[in-house]
Every structure is written in C-alpha cells, then in structure tokens.
Image (cartoon, rainbow, N blue to C red; front, side, top):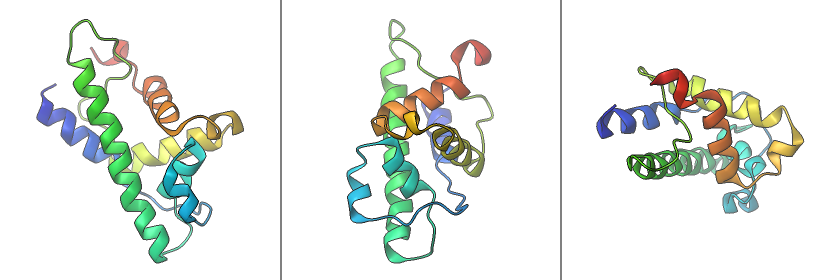
Length: 130
C-alpha cells in the first residue's frame, strides 16, 4: 500500500464513536496509559474537555500509526501491523481498540503507545494482509 493509502487508513482508524466511557480529566491528556487514551477516545459527554479529548485521541492515534508505518517502510524493520485494504472504518477501528483495551485491566495499565501498537498487531497482523 502506498504512503497515501496508509495515511488514509490511519485517518479512517481515527474516527470516534462515543459509547459511554468515563469523563475525561486534564490528567488523562498526559496519555501515560492505555486507560488514559481510552478515556479520551471514548467520551462520556459532549463537554469541552471531552471534545478536546476526542481531538487529542485523533492526533495521538494518527501520530503513532504514521510514525510506525514510516519505520516499517524499511524492508529490514519489524512489521508490527498491516492495515487491510480497504482499512477499517474510523468508528470500527477506534471502537475495536476501546473494547479490546477495556476487556482487561492489564491492557489499561500498559503505556498508551504500547497498548495501541499491541492492539494493532493483534487485530491487523501482517501475515493476513500480505
């Protein structure tokens, strides 16, 4: 897939489907844990802080995906994930990440980047898409 295709896939994965998470606090914006990221990606209300959380989630997820894809462009680099073509819809991608993370408290306590990369690797392994 081309860089443009990867960027489109990353953008699609970023959509948010609010399904009743916890109310975000300013502390969540440090995104230290997957739980912090889930709280921002899955807002409880339409408050200003929850709306800011959605925007933060968008940027965080897109940044991680695009950075990892640039790394994976090196043929000798480990391939952590490969988005399918066509990639998942935004709502499906973020909804699946939130559900995956909430399924285990161990996942919620992982560093946010580790949790996101682990999710992507489990749901979009390269062997299935190449």
